[in-house]
Length: 264
Image 1 (cartoon, one colour):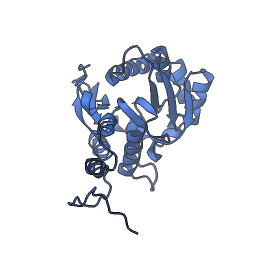
Image 2 (cartoon, one colour; image 1 turned 180 degrees about the vertical axis):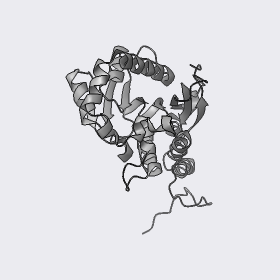
Image 3 (tube, rainbow, N blue to C red; image 1 turned 60 degrees about the vertical axis):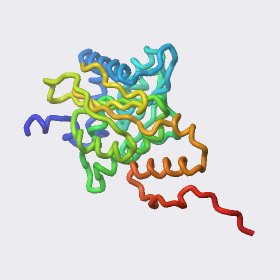
Image 4 (cartoon, rainbow, N blue to C red; image 1 turned 30 degrees about the vertical axis):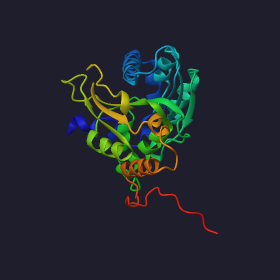
């Protein structure tokens, strides 16, 4: 239990933990910069982005912009969201290329549907597993995060890096429409826990290199375009998708999707 108490997410709210002193570490500590860069490199590898063309990515818990720097170096564009004003100030001072937004991912990802080709989050999602005040319900905040992320992504993929709460996180991710499993990069590591998400049709097990949780975004938007809008198949697929998200849906009957006759 002693080692557990030393984890940052067990020390209080992230906006208080990541103060100006902590932000300076992410700017000046060469070891921390190197680790962050390598983790981002692995995240982009697991995204399986199309080669030779830039992608528009979301960096959740972007901090001082170290991950964003690597994303920019790889020729992609990005938007970062973080709950710590001090970390975002550090990113601004470093003149990072991405757009920055102050926000709490536990209240949802505030972007239009289909805004991003992919998403990364380095050591951030596990903060949602803790309740820092009475009104915080981890399961509810995780579901709010994943359901809004599901909507914000297009048909590429999402990679989320974390260190704990795999069971709680996967449960809420599945409710929001994701599916997947665990991929082990470093079997002997008790700390590193990552989440990888990709479209269902292209889901593949990444080459093992930290322990990883693999999720697939389902259903794929492209598949939905093949259905005739308002047809019975379209209605049934939409109802099934809402069931996977934990929403109340009327039972299917012989009348589901049937066109009504005009009334005069």
